[in-house]
Image (cartoon, rainbow, N blue to C red; front, side, top):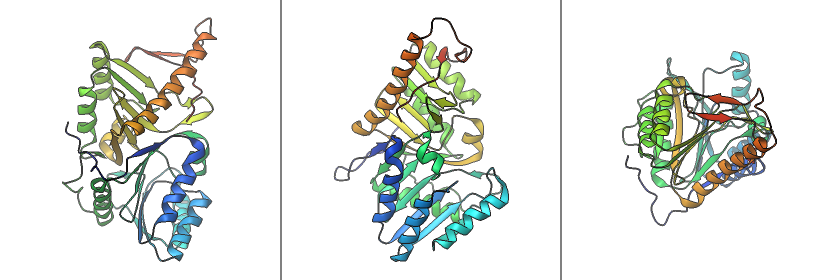
Length: 312
């Protein structure tokens, strides 16, 4: 799989996993915008985000928000969100595809940076979940996200010329992820509480039987945090971060966006997250003299899962 690279003079990608850093980093991107913001939302209830969007429109920034027409909580809850967003001065559009659920979570400010997140802009995801986001200045990614949100806003097909760094569902996500996993050479690590797609489960199992180390963290909780983010790490050199779950409904029936990251420092941050989870699992195992009920051996991947104290 050929992955387009970042131009040499563009600032390096970064990955943020720490709970304490998420809200401030997103607010800072919004605060620095001077002309326009394109925001793809699934859920949002965080007052600080709403206030920052209102400040942006107040200084003349054109804020465009694309939202889902379907989510748990019903029409009343969605309408409340839409009203709050409109009260910030943002222009609001509702994704119109009758078959594909809109679940992408990203933001583009001016000519960059862009944020591709695993989480919603909610109090819960800013405070209580294991999640991450990528901050990128890659012009091809920024152009691609702008073109994608414009197409989704207008009901047009996915643009054909999007950078290969963007994993976009449902049109090409299954093919891209299958290729990445198939090309792994030594190790595959996954955080995904919704991992269930039969084809990808078989592929992961085949890679394990071929001698690769395959580690899956699919518990609903990782220590004190709810497991919400979907993160893939391959050979400690390629990371995938975004809204895309390794589940059939996410791969085949939803607008999802994730990004491929190869920047060494950014990938190292993802590896640090996995190490923190692995360390907590090792500590848990050392304290356990018999197999407790909440440790589940998963035959499909030959991996045992246990509660974690993730340092997200």
